[in-house]
Amino acid sequence: MAELDAKSIIEYIGNAPKKTPVKVFIKGEIDRLDFPEEIENFTEKDFGVIFGDWKDVEPFLKENKALITDYHIENEARNSAVPLVDLKKFDARIEPGAIIRDRVAIGKNAVIMMGAIINIGAEIGDDTMIDMGTVLG
Image (spheres, rainbow, N blue to C red):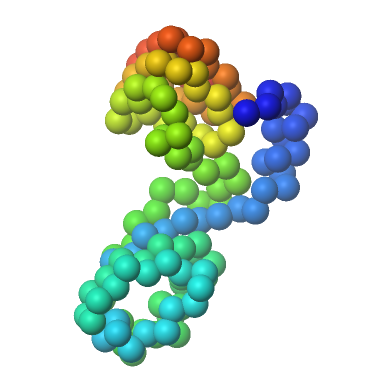
């Protein structure tokens, strides 16, 4: 990842599309629903889970309320410009409960402990340990 200076971070956050990602558990006549391509769905006849941005999911739920008997919504962000990073791409130990945003660099064999917060633009070197409660970026 290229180094990000303060100006490029501010520009990225300002210009990035804001998203409210949601996960929705739905029950009803699910096999009769026509899902738009913006909504990822893992559904069967009468139950399923859908993923998408709230701006797409909310109208879909309202338009299909006759076919959906119940639903439960989970979300962890609102109008967020910087998503959490995909942890699988790092060759490091990252404990549950660490909060790591996208556009960070984490070196090989680094250890990120529970409760650490790593913000956009942070760079963590090889073999570095970030302890509990540490805030970087």
